[in-house]
Image (cartoon, rainbow, N blue to C red; front, side, top):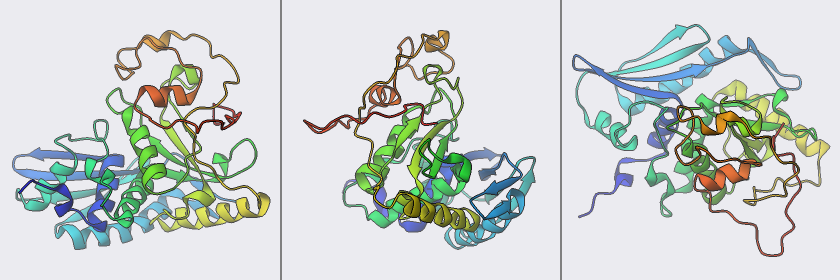
Length: 308
């Protein structure tokens, strides 16, 4: 009988996988196996329109519920460890248990988020949609942000899913976009790449999703969910006749980007990108495996490719 990884996954495992792929690290020292999940924040406060939360307090409160959920799943010790700019959940396994082995299967042998990809099982057509949604919710809880400052140039509010920029994980944003659009029906507006041609150096990559389109996913972190609902409602009121549309895979070019010496940076770029110039975000997406193409006869939408 062929091995099927989906025999080892359900909604709770999918949620855990989202946390791990987003900001997880696996380690083993002197027989003690450890999973660390990093919950970071850069600002002292996170703001919606009216809602304002102190980041450290909100994250700590949100982690209580997440820890309870993981405790039920993993049946092992889970501690909260404070650090400058965040809080880590630290899970310790004293034995090489089936749970630990399953986590290693989900990460395909990689041990830290700079090297993770989305597990192939998440793209299986017969895997329940609810489980795929839980994966994205886990990723968003640890690596997503929703705040008024994310709004698009036309005023619409957005959620951003951040992928920290390492040369080994450039395909992850495209995989995440595919999961959202093709499997969950959640339209992605665009990917703001941390690429020198996009004017951002090698900062983090950002998947941008309008707040109202992200509601079917949502957050388990209560402060993020509260702000999401507030900003989604503001979108509906201000743009009652606008329905978020998925990225078509190509759009009209507004400008040609200047050549940048960073285009040949072997230490920062995926090998498929080295030495290539890009004028729009979707050209990078295509180079990294995006298969979306506009329908024949469809007018390509003119859009600010910077996403800012």
